[in-house]
Amino acid sequence: HSMAPQRAAFKLDLRRTLAFASFGAFYGSLPGFAIYNLAYPAVFGAARPLATTIFDVTVHCPFIYFPCFYVAKEFINSSFDTVVRAPTAVVKQALTSWAGNLHEDVVACFCVWFPLNFTNFRFVPLHLRMPFMSVTGLVWVGMLSVRRGATASAAVPSPPSLPALVGQAQPKAL
Image (cartoon, rainbow, N blue to C red; front, top):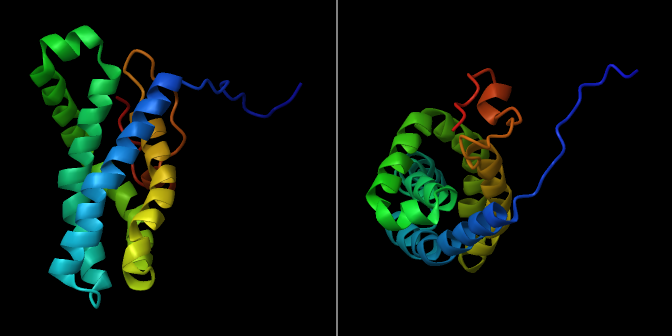
């Protein structure tokens, strides 16, 4: 018999996949366009890609993007009844998860988005920034979905995260 490790069978959760795709499409369109195509050029100009990148991975992602992601995740994973009867409890749980995972998520964000954002802000023309972010963001939201999207009752084993691969602790399971 083989000594190769057994891998769990992949099972696509269509509801979760569509929900996270919807989140990515929403965030990448309205807020993403406003942030990347309007706000950043107005504040940082075209000549400061490093400053823009640092701001994005240290302020925007941790304190705007990730809270939105966790709120969307919690609404996706909550029952319809819970969403209707206790939406503030859903948001409170989301923000609790965000705070508990913030360090690991920021490290992963830095590892992925620092080089991608610097490339984007330095070399990609303004009118192509959101398409660039959308394509790279598809991989990112897929990674977040695998790492942070599972419900506590239906958690699937996560592949090693970027922080784990660079010697950090494994992220907490939700």
